[in-house]
Image (cartoon, one colour):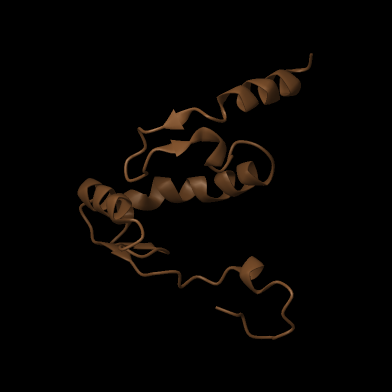
Length: 108
């Protein structure tokens, strides 16, 4: 067996494992969490990881979410930083949301 195949089998076996130790996240099946350590997820992780090194220099933190949707996560982040944390709602355009539209303007 190759390492990836064994990893895949182990991952499948753990899909139903409940993750209840991530601050601000309700108990969730492991299989329902995004997989950031391979493929496109790994590329995204590697691109935003340097931002965490700069976080100590921040004057505030903007979250693309709403406090009403993720109050525990916002409270957790607020308790961990000495600067304001703002949940501004989904203000950042996501190209995938407007896929299939011919408008030159993003469809928020």
